[in-house]
Amino acid sequence: MRRQVLADCFEDAGVLLAGHQQDHGHDRDGIDAMTGLLKRQATAMGSEARVAAAYEEHRMIGFCLYYHYGTTTWIRAVALDRRHPAPHLYFNLMYYLPIEDAYAHGTTALHAGMTTIEAKRRRGAQVSGLYALVDRHPAGPSPRRG
Figure 1 (tube, helix red, strand yellow):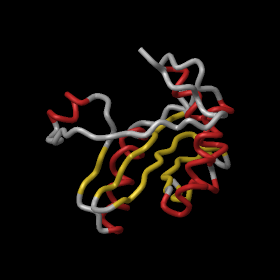
Figure 2 (tube, one colour; figure 1 turned 30 degrees about the horizontal axis):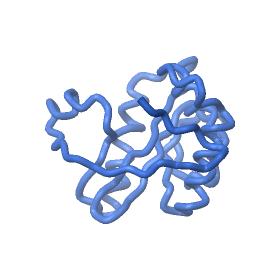
Figure 3 (spheres, one colour; figure 1 turned 120 degrees about the vertical axis):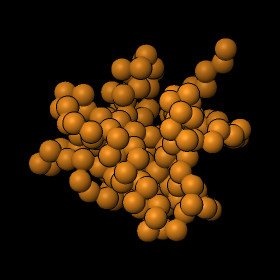
Figure 4 (tube, one colour; figure 1 turned 135 degrees about the horizontal axis):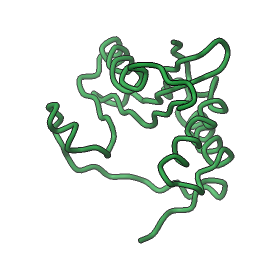
């Protein structure tokens, strides 16, 4: 396990994130798009873009990207290499490691994303409305309109 800033690992994380997105039916979110997205976030957020990552020797096999902002730790992305299963890796990357860092940083809340709301609610999460911005960078994924 390693803790690092996103700028030091956005390429490896981009490969994993693209695989994760494609596993969930987002075929347009390929390696170039995801690596470009993470590179822009690394540039914009600097040392605030924190990553907890699992490695098998020198190869990243899972990561969680998160930010501390105000009193909240915001989980931004989690992805695993499904070809290298490791028991409990997802939960450790998604919750335990960011929570440990949140305690050290002094944040008092964790935002764990907008999906699987009911599972999070059953475990004590408080659900509230949020706002989002669209990334309109030409190299990024195009916004989906329904």
